[in-house]
Amino acid sequence: MKVAICQYDMRWEDAASNLRTVERLVERADADLVVLPEMFSTGFKLHASVVAEPMSGPTIAAMREWSRRYGKAIVGSVVIVDDEGRFRNRQFFVKPSGEMTWYDKRHLFRPGGEGRDYTAGTERVVVEYGGVRFLLQVCYDLRFPVWSRNRGDYDAIIYSASWAADRREAWRLLLRARAVENQAFVLGVNRVGDDPSAHYAGDSAIVDFRGRTLCEAGDEEALLVCELDLQAMNRFRDAFPALQDADDFEIRI
Image (tube, rainbow, N blue to C red):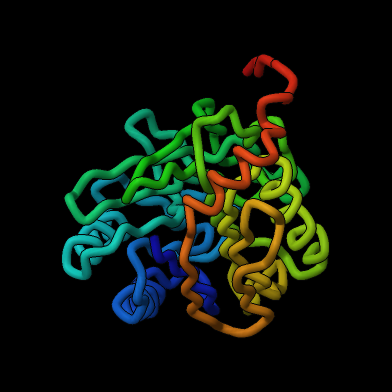
């Protein structure tokens, strides 16, 4: 499967402009799956009420239309207000067939006060597409390995992120740690540019099941495409079956 990661500078709280930018990237991407950053249409927004959309809002409608028109699955997170009036940092996986699955970010960014406005998710979500099983994760989730621990139920992890530049070493290290410990591909998609509270240095990357970097974006806008070789991953898992020695555990929420 060919996957694309889209790293770009967002216009603060300007969904219409950002959606135009993203559509051009989706159209250009020579890939089966296109992955976007966290809150890709607005930038990372702690005060959710300013930018939140219902599930019938323009960003979700655009994702569904692009996926249908260009024949590519699309993944990215959006600020959503749910039917109970709660705000969610919700990552969507939209398929060309119209099928849509979502994951609500579990670990809200405590240093920035994300939990004051947003409600955390409680469900771990895996989506199968094109024969590949993807675990959905958002930004700060990257720091919590128990939540993403491979239980033999996925082949790749997707992290949509808005990860500030002053913590870029942690971002680069943890992407590779998650790949190695879970013997899985990791797709980490960050943004570049500035918002009122942070500078973003990108470093979006696709890492293989050994922790090797397949592609990395650096600190400029970029559209990168890589191939995920599941046969190679499965051969490695068979030859080095570390997942079979993993400890049992239970997550209490």
